[in-house]
Amino acid sequence: RDHRPLITFPDNNNFHVLSAGEYRRLLLYLTSIPSLLEAEMGFHIIIDRRKDRWNSVKTVLLRISEFFPGIIHTVYVLRPASFLQKALSEVSSKLFKEEFRFRVLVCSGVEELCEHFDRSQLTPDLGGELQYSHAEWIQQRIALEKFSTLMKEISSKLDDFMHEIVDCDMGNDPSQTKELLDSQETRYKALKDELTSATTQGEELLTQVRKPNLTYNIISHVAAVERLLVQLEETERQFDNFWQKHSTKLNHWLKFRTFLLNFKQMQATLDGHLKTACDMTEVGETASRVENLIQEAGDFEKLCNCDLNTASAVIEDGEKLMQDPLSSVDHIESKCEELRRTSALLIDKINKRNMLLAKARELMDRIDKANEWCTTGVELLAGEGGLLAVDKLLEDAQTFGLAAPDQFRDMLMHSATQETRALVTQVAQRVEDVWLMVSVKRATLQRAATKPARPVQSVP
Image (tube, rainbow, N blue to C red; front, side):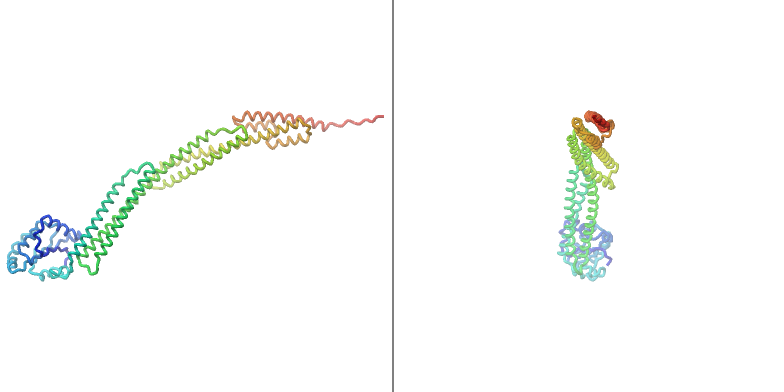
């Protein structure tokens, strides 16, 4: 009636066969079944010895006195029912009640016992109404203990796994880190499957023990399974939280090491391109050679642009990585800045190279046109061309920038490089010579065109 847990020592005349060790294990197990709060309230104990002798009562009481792993509130004794034993009990009970540290009540029969308990708490053999199947109780306890053991095994596996990976070497090579992450994730999923399977088993067990019109002892099994399921749910939640933090840390480390590897590769690649660009100094001495160099420069620029785009992607990855609270911002920023600087230098070199080759192409175009003009001029000088042909030749010189020989020389020398300076000087001199000769011929033709005709004299 006061909701304290109750342990019954039935009148089976076999208590004496229990060894001391078996008795201790039995009591330890039985007292561990109630909740901690219930156990702290103290136990009621019923000793049924109606079919036995009074000495057996004393034996049980002595054993309980020597060892009981809990608080005893009251011990109720159903005394032996035979006439002789009843007579002995009336005398003996008065003598030994004071021998024990717990309260002992001797009941003459089940009616007196029922004065202290609700009949729904007692089995029919004790005058109660509690329908109790010991075989069913044992079966459920075995299933419950198996489930509890399974939970302990899983919990131990989870602890071992978490302790193993919490301080593991994450590796400096991305491939090692990826392999480690995949391996740990596989083990995590396997443990999650075990947790899911255990939850399913627990729910099935709960369905088995939860039946209509449950008695108190079976209700305790339901409560025990529910407690275990709650513990399992909490264990899984903690495990998921741990894995979430650990996998986030490991994934971040993988991204960081991948970024560093990509940085080193791209920095080395861009440095190589930069060295190649610095070595590309030839501008060509002929138009065909300049065109070949322009083609080579274009192919090189395409190659560089591909790697520059990759470098930009690496920088973008670094900038995203810096947003992560786990990142070392200064370290990543320095790497990104180094890539930006090298990329800018390479782009500048490519642009300058393209501008230089464009000027070389323009120079070669002027030189080719100048040579063609000189050839035409020499042919004109050698022929019978008139003033109109000479004026057209001088007019054609405007197409390649020849307005005056000295200005043309300055223009060519401004575009010349060390490689083309001799060629430019030679062409400029040739242009000046032809220009001078053509100018002289033009002046001669002009004088001839403006000379007055001689008067015609008549003959007498």
